[in-house]
Image (tube, rainbow, N blue to C red; front, side):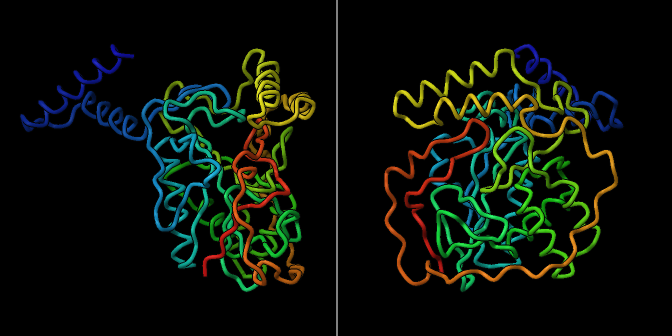
Length: 352
């Protein structure tokens, strides 16, 4: 690695010298500029499930973007510059439409990539977990300390009075699928919520091209939890980035490693899924996450317009939320993507 950086320095120095002499850009100068560009954006080596990240960018909080408190300690906020830029631009796009919108973000990758505790992917800087936008019945934004699961009717089993925010979540998906600077390959999300979003998009008259693109990218992953509490966005390998492997690859003895790690955590009381749950999950997780190939058929048409079910009474607006408890921050994680739902408090905040 040191030798690689030293060689890169020589190439950049030669490129600078050529420019100062007024010479026309050479092939080596063009190559050096490409290398510099990749250094600024980082380098994804290996696959999402067995890889690492060289360089890269750190996702910073902003008035329109926050890191979920339950995820902040790990500092898993690193990714390729194109991924970090995608998340930031998408959050800003939603904020432009809805001035009170704040995107809540879970894990990306660690600095340097590699294993992330309780994840099977997120290793090479190309994955990001984006929590759903949540609203009250009066359309005020609601925020939780961690991710919240939703049914297909838009209600949250563990949070009466909280609803899946169709408008803001569609604005987020719409921005992601129109991204031009990063090649988005998947938006993992539960099938009932995918159908709900496509129905909402048709209801408001969204562009058929955008709806079809969203229908193509949104998919419920195979062999893992359904992703009913967040969007998992994955981008493809950037053009010309050697060493980047597009599709996930299972590590040798990965099933045993995941099982042992989860069992140790459960036994030590530091959180983590029950060993039996992990064993069941790993047994069905041969493909790890996405389908083994890109969609082979043309994008399916957007879902037909159907009236959305009316929300139940808004209990969240009738009483203040309970205080955050230590149990929330210790919520167990599954070994793929994030915290499992808990019946305890969510540290809810209603920003009006």
